[in-house]
Amino acid sequence: ELGLTDVQKMKFEEVKQKVAEHVNYRKDSMSVAVKVFNVETVKEAPDFNVLVNTVKEISGNRKDGMDAITDSVNEFYQSLDNGQKKKFVNALKETAERYEKWSK
Image 1 (tube, rainbow, N blue to C red):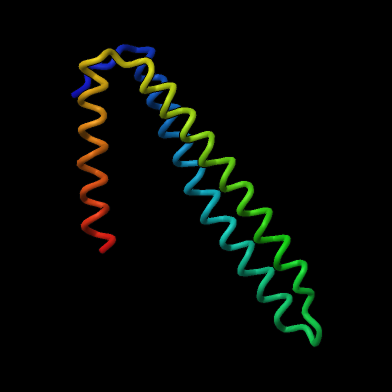
Image 2 (cartoon, rainbow, N blue to C red):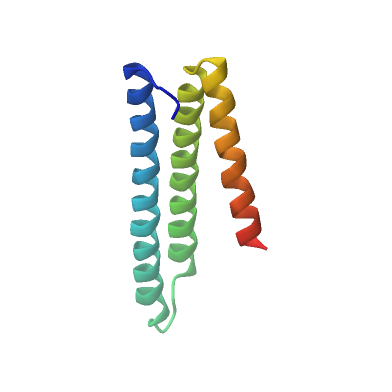
């Protein structure tokens, strides 16, 4: 629908790849956090610092992943011409409106 050039298609594929990596990381990191929680909470004296540090590490990595996605989206957006930018922004608005309705 945007009529992307080969370079723009490549940038868009990079965005999709970063999103997929982030989603997989979130899933994997939740699994790690649950395992750490389960190991520590069965102990007579759980090491709460292990839990805190695990969550902090996961949170930091998630932020880095979101920063990478944001940078990729911006790079893709900057590669668009004005007509493509308008269509892209309109698609984002529609997605945001659907999310807003769902989140209420």
